Image 1: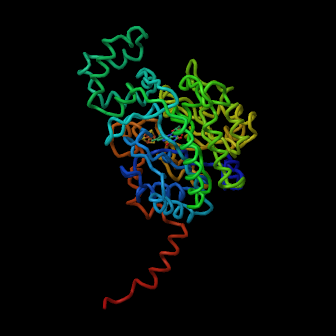
Image 2: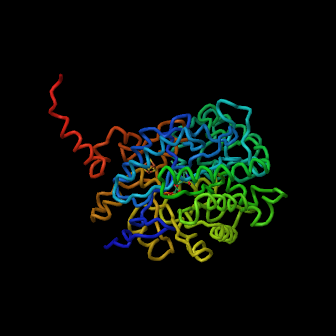
Length: 466
Ligand SMILES: Cc1cc2nc3c(=O)[nH]c(=O)nc-3n(C[C@H](O)[C@H](O)[C@H](O)COP(=O)(O)O)c2cc1C
Ligand code: SF4
């Protein structure tokens, strides 16, 4: 079978991407607690650049310097000011030593109601469009086989009056939401993982002020400009998955009665203002992407039709491509860890019809499903999330007709579970994942860096000690 279609170049604004294979944005938790991307972050991206990805989209990088951004428990990378620039510039420079590999930074103003008070300032509550707390239904998470296995492995149910996970999934609402079951669930999760506890019983956020919204719009534009100056080929606005920007877009999470709530235009205002302000600083040429959930996947949430209207507004404001996702934390079973492959492509047609822009969609394991998405589902670039953790060399293996050598992601969700249970992210099938910095031989091979170092070494290796 020929996969040559996956290797055709494509244009996003002024950027040419050498093939149709991107690495999906993923926060791996490798950043240090202050938000500086160190050598492991560099090696993680370099390995995927070496593996042949045409476009690397970074994890969500925070531009909000205030404690209320709400995500410090996840060791999120930051780009709030110039102290972070040199660290990102070395990542960009390294990625660019591989043949035409492009790198796009995903920028985020914060977690909103999906965040929680910072570890060091426990009284600072995250800010969101409206003070509506998040409550995640564990049954949704457990509808995903991988999650079910990971949680069963890590949580001792004997603390919880013997709640059985299998029974929990089947529980009707009146029983699941009863005080008794909720108290037992709290006992079960408490002390096992702070993140999981906060995910399920999130505190109410405070309402963000208009001054703070405008500040975020301005900061987003300033850091997008800085990112281009650092050499990033593109920037992406982090607007899916129920995080701060998405909370504005969704009628379920945004009940404001000012210019930032109500109509679709008003709900999209923070996002379209950010795009317009970026354009004002960087001009019309630089590629600006926007990641959007295809729909909220919940009653009362944004529908696909609304998301398409929002995508069209983004296009009018100056966006060059739509990176697709779906849902939010409340639909975690299908948002972050869909078991199968190809599920997210279903939104591509709608976005394409609404905007005419290139679309990017994740959720692939096999090149066969990837090819189908490109040829039949209006997806222009496929992206690999977990599959790029499992096998950084997926693109080159497909190009070299070595599909049988691909190490497949089993959808076991160990990577996510490590993240939530405060562990270093490792992969069940790729022992080099999370250890890339110890394997420069694997990722430096064939890069311009390798040949430059070889030339330098040649003239230094046989020097005597004096
Ligand atoms: C560990 C991990 C961290 C993630 N972090 C982000 C992120 O920072 N930004 C984002 O837009 N999506 C994030 N995602 C979602 C992925 O981009 C992707 O949409 C999801 O994993 C589904 O694609 P897949 O089936 O190819 O893994 C993350 C996913 C994983 C596995
Ligand atoms: S195989 Fe690796 S990348 Fe895939 S879900 Fe498991 S740990 Fe994550």
